[in-house]
Amino acid sequence: MPKTSNKDERKFTCTACGLYQNCISKRMKPTGSFKKGIMFIGESPSEMDDRLGAPFQGKTGMLLQRTCRKLGINLFEDCLVLNAVACRPSYPSGNNRVPTNKEIDCCRRLVLQAVEEYKPKLIILLGGSAVYSLIGNRWKRDLGTISKWRGWTIPDQDFQTWICPTFHPSYIERSDTGVEQVVWEQDLKQAFTLLETAEYQNSPYPLHPFPVYKEPRIEVIEDLHILDNIRNNEVAFDYETTGLKPHAVGHRIICCAVAPSEDHAYVFIMPKTKEERKPFIDLLQDEKIGKIAQNMKFEHSWSEVRLRTEVKNWVWDTMIATHVFDNRQGITSLKFQVYVQFGVIDYSSEIAPYLKGKEEKNTNSINNIEELISTEEGKQKLMHYCGLDAVFEFRLAKKQQEMLLPYHFKTLL
View (cartoon, rainbow, N blue to C red):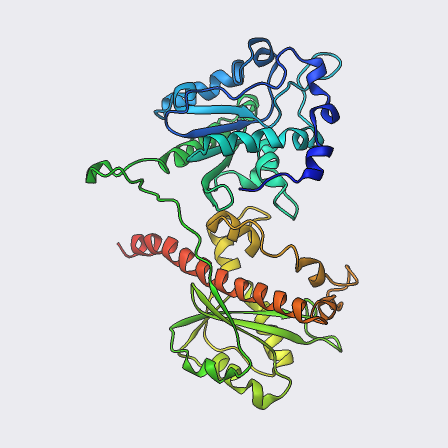
């Protein structure tokens, strides 16, 4: 489980936050009997919560209690409830306000302590502040709003538990269309379903067992003839290049990964000669082997321009498939999908700075990847990252194909 560093513990303290100085119930404790192992993390105590000394006692708390009861869950008997900040934030006027990121940072250690102590089977994050509390410090990109995160059932590998973000009940209470209420209830119902047992089999095991992450084998190769042995129906492949577009002088493909399965990828530095590249070119042109990529036009254009070859038999683009399933903005990146689908939150932050173009507005700009591979350690890190990309693309494609299967059968009936 992720821990706060000693540096963070010194920087983010109750004294640095100061909320405890202006509230009645200081450092409010988590509340609930926790019989079903469900943890709710909200935003911050309301005025009513502050007076009574427990979370979700006011109007929005009543709404959450009623909705949970409707779905067969008793909020305070079956769950443990707490907030991203344990002290009530308020304006000088006395009205409630949203906690700042700094205040959430200062209280994160208490949230992490609660997760460590209680080891919940399911964590439901209510609103953007809760998402920032549990995910924000580990997510190295733009976190976005709760609209981007709601509805996902995330098998978080750091915490070894399901994480399900959704709207805060205060947002539902303010909405006047009723649509948000329906979506909110669907999110909660989907989250609770993760803990259902297979009663029809008289089994104590959940219908949705928590997936254990399997570390793939990333095999670095120099002789590309090993690719001649690939006889799979489909492979995923991924390039790491000197930029976004291949057309400018100086651009080249640095390395490539080919994943013939969900658990294995071959990775190699792209050979300089046509003869050395031939086994890989043959693979790209083999019409019997389907090709998978994340945003296939990237690999397709780089193959055409820099390798002078056309990729034959494209069968799946994980980015396009993601957009087909869910057209929200900000969710189609491979890194986001790897987290929400497989629970792996960060495998690229060490490499990402080197992949940014030196001229942000020029899509043909050269990036800093040459600096990374100037050392053997950097080269190995890049190839491992490339291999993970290919493996995750393969895993994501297989999952998306399984998700699409019921829709296919419905169209046939």
